[in-house]
Structures are given as structure tokens and as C-alpha cells.
Amino acid sequence: MTTFEEFTALVKENRSCRRFDNACSITMDELKDLVDLARHCASAANNQPLKYILSTDAQTNRDIFSCLGWAAYLTDWPGPEPAEQPSAYIVITGDHTISDKFWCDHGIAAQTILLGARTKGLAGCMFGAINIKKLKTFLDIPEHLEVKLVVALGKPAEKAVIDPVGPDGSIKYFRDEHQVHHVPKRDTQELIFKTF
Image 1 (tube, rainbow, N blue to C red):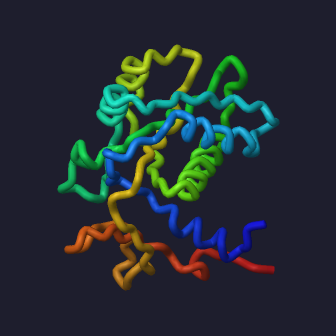
Image 2: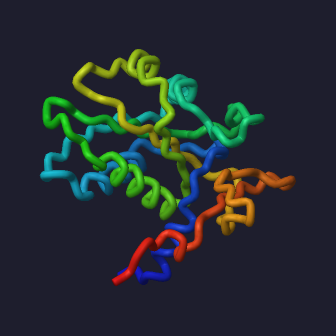
């Protein structure tokens, strides 16, 4: 059984990664393993309405990449160069033939996929900033499948660290002069509104 300390370390390692070693491929079986993890997650009313589109294909990956908004706080960075782009993607959709209410199922699934990826030495980033119309055209996604999130995956090519929020209160992530990605996080005590 995993200890709380081991799980804490895994969660802290699971930072959003935006630069990858594109020379390192991910197999379709690895993506299917990650979807199988998500399959075991909780689902509202146990409807299990999520459907997944998997890509390890270079051209399809380029198409998906062009539909995503990369790191809004890094205003002078247009996104990773081709050699640092993801090696694989999982597009998470909700199937309206099963349910019209997906609640938070896609968030639970995406976080589980990302945690599973970390155990394989991979990293990823969850995207909600998506040009959905363009993505649906590229991937020929039928109308009954609603795009909810895209998860980009690959071997990490950047270091990310967690910092406390500074005196200015800014929560904006940034890169330092060594290209280390810093993610300010609020203190636990600030998050707890009330105890009884």
C-alpha cells in the first residue's frame, strides 16, 4: 500500500509540464493503461459517459497542438518548439448519448491520468483552453461527443518547483533565469476557511 508520504510526493511531482523531450515516444499501450486507470474513477450516478481519443501519431499531434492555448501567464512564450512538444495526447469527451451531465468526471479522470503518467516517468498538462471547433474538425469528432479537456503527455524536459505565494500575493507561475518553472501555492492555513 502507498503511504501518505509517498502519495504526497507524487502529487507534488505532478506539476503541469509544458516542455517535453519529443524524441521520447509514448506507446498506444501506455495511453490505454492510463485510460484504464481513469475507467476506475468515480463517475456521477456511475453513468461513465466519458470517451477518449488517443494520439501518438506525429501529424495528429501537431494538429492537436495547434488547437491549444499554452501558458497564458508566460506572455512572451508562444508554446514549446517542435522538439519540446508532447509525444502523445488524450482528448477527453463526454458522450451525450449516455448523459447530458458530466459534472466533474472529466477533471477526476484527467488528474488520475496525470498521476498515473508520473509513475511511468512521464509528465503532462491538462488543457481547457481549446479551439474546440478546429479540434473537432481535425479529429472528425461527431456531434454527440463534447470535448471537455485535452491532456498532453511526454517525457518532461523542464523542472518545476512549488513556491509559497510571495508578499505581493501573486499566484502567476513564471520561469527564472535558469528556465526553472515556479508555481506559487497558497498556504494551507489560508485555504481553510473554518474549522469546528
